[in-house]
Image 1 (cartoon, rainbow, N blue to C red):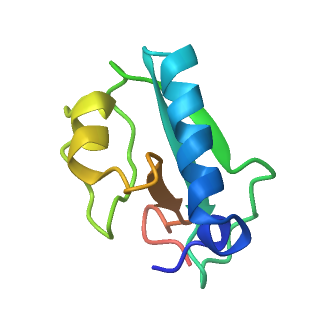
Image 2: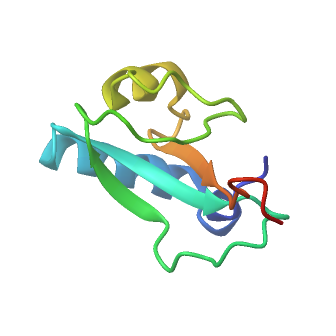
Length: 100
């Protein structure tokens, strides 16, 4: 999936920002959260988040895959972080209970 954040910010700027964040907040993961392009869910105003590294029980997609729900964010970050130092995740609406 193409990232609008990557398109809008040059690599060196993103990398420097992620490094600064990781140095200042060593117990947090720098995350970019963007809506799936064709999703009809409302757009969240914020894209950048600092997530606790020991957070679990969050349902996210990373590289179009749903990681195990028991996985720590620190593990997901180490496995899927971008070369710029950010973890890119996407969100989308989902019908529940068979509603449309």
